[in-house]
Amino acid sequence: MKKSLIALAVAGAFAAPAFAATSNIDISGKMAWDVTKMGSTGVSDNNTMRVNNNNSRITVRGTEDLGGGMKAGFSATYGWGLGNGSSLSSQETYAFLGGGWGEARIGVHDPLIKPISRRVDLFADQSTGDARHLTQQGGIDGRANNVVAYISPNFSGFQVAVGHAMDETKASNSGATNMASLTYNNGPLYLGLGYDDRDLASDQTTWRVGASYSLGDLRFVGVYQNTDSVGGNSAADVKVWGLGAGYTMGAMTFKGQYYNLSDDRASSDASTYALGVDYAFSKRTVAQLAYSKVKNDSGINYGGATVAGGTNDAIAIANGADPTRLSLGIVHNF
Figure 1 (tube, helix red, strand yellow):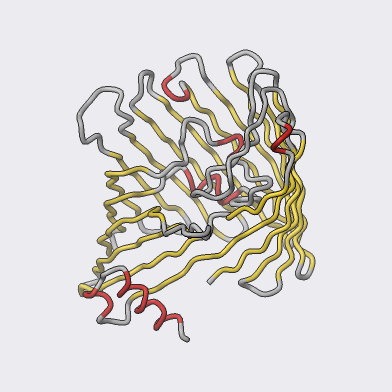
Figure 2: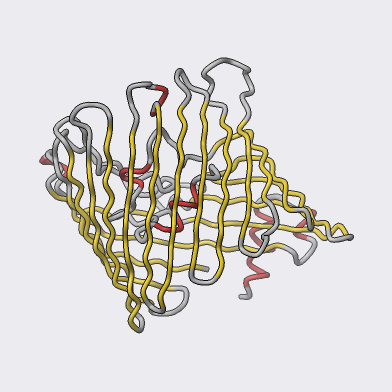
């Protein structure tokens, strides 16, 4: 069945008759699973095998040509639960109006800082190695409600985005968020700078810088992140940096990365490294083998589940434990 016909069927299922009557509905997504062996968690019952759903999702996107270079539409992404009796869960969902001046969006939206680290994380969305084990400070990659955002056109590789997550209650310390990003993507070079400010007991502010450069089949990546007052705690200032490289040889891509976290609070530093290989059966289907280890100071317990859209099951980690993961999985994009 052609993708366009599938898209129309999905559009009908989501009660979008105005779009279903036309052919301007697109559908995309992925199915991603792995089998993971946990170790050294410090909790005896958690040294176990498990199956993880690595952010399997489906996106339905519709557009309408308004003439004069203008267009309107929507984008709705849902997570596949894929468990027995589970259902779709809403993720990023917004309406937009666009033209030569850029695109305005309103709805539920990922923080503008998020794509900067996702693009340079060689293990993004994998239960093993995903850098969000350390970078997810104060929920900075969690999507927000009540967002209005503007995405500029691409100017020779440069693009600007600004947004605001509104506070409906007008209460103080409500978590209302201001966010912005500036990216450059041209040829082998990608650079990204993001800012996120949240209204908490003490304002939580995050700066994130990401970079990627390709030399033929060899790719280098790096990220730096500084979050002040994590969760509104003025004593919790956390810095994270990471470096990685990947090399593609035929159908295989060998990759590795290292991340380090320093926390102003006592005994709360951590680091992690990951090694892996991807094997591309085709442009859409990839097998993934990965190993990772997190090293925790005595007062912290990083290395449980990542936050990849309701992906893998949460794992309890004892303070000071150095958890390991070994996984074999498959991803099919459509």
